[in-house]
Amino acid sequence: MTRVAVFGAGSWGTAFSMVLADAGNDVTLWARRQELADAINLYHENGDYLAGIPLPTTIDATHDPERALADASVVVLAVPSQSLRANLEHWAADIPPDALVMSLMKGVEVGTTKRMSEVIADVGRVDPARIAVLSGPNLSREIAERQPAASVIACSDHRAALRLQRLCHTPAFRPYTMTDVVGCELGGATKNVIALAVGMAQGLGFGDNATATVITRGLAEIARLGAALGADPYTFSGLAGLGDLVGTCSSPLSRNRRFGELLGRGQRVDEIVAASRQVAEGVKSCESIRDLAQRSGVDMPIVEHVAALIRGETDPQEMLAQLISRAPKAERD
Image 1 (cartoon, rainbow, N blue to C red):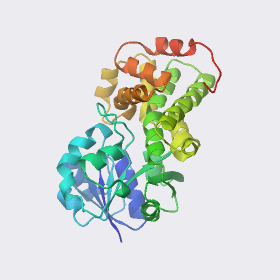
Image 2 (image 1 turned 90 degrees about the horizontal axis):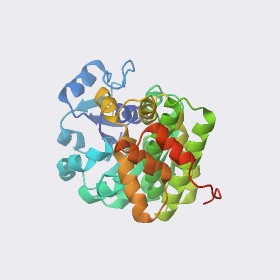
Image 3 (image 1 turned 120 degrees about the horizontal axis):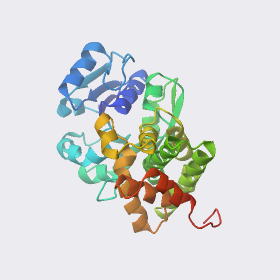
Image 4 (image 1 turned 180 degrees about the horizontal axis):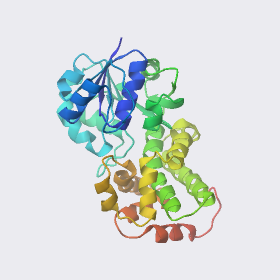
């Protein structure tokens, strides 16, 4: 059995802990709140985030990061992306020096515009060859229900990706491997912003034509940014690109799409945030992705308009009207 520490007892961290436990690993799940860790150990259920789904009894929850990291061969990070740096400053010294570190997070850091793997390397002082990212169409509740799903594990060291692939391959969860860390992370982070725009279109009452248009043009924006930053173009037609984008933009389980729907129906950003206990990553990352695009000389109009809306400079109806009225051009442009 491989000892795996999973940091983050939200819906995705908990669901992936189930995958790891089903694959035969010894899993310790770190929870930010002591009471949640206690409840998971007592009832074998995460009632806060995945109510009604029994957890494997082999998952051991703790609030103590040192205990979670002790003798871990693999460390999985599933905390909100904008809190990663602050958390790692406390955890870095206890990460075993030979452990693989895998990010489940999908965001770009505000201020630095760093991808999550870059933050891990920087703050955690981890060799990039030991850092992997997992991304794909992986809605937490469906994973926890053991519905069939696939994902991609990207690491610059393909041998490390293969090792992680073996550790999370189950009858219901099929991981693939690649070495394109940049493309995998950009696809996962940017699709959340596109899902906000799709949700707004649906909240305004628009139909499938508008939805398909935003998804397709969103994919073009993701691919342009990826090309500028050296990603493999193939990545964006795969699970970490198109797969994740379609899943997030199409499912009512998607927090980002749901957030966008509420915006489209007239609710304010602060109202939606106050009513939710889970983070819609696109709300936090839209500004940093916009900054990254501008620094890279990449035109990303959907991302720019979503960021302006989150700042309170426009509303959903005006935003979509501005997008549709942009000057026509060749599709490849």
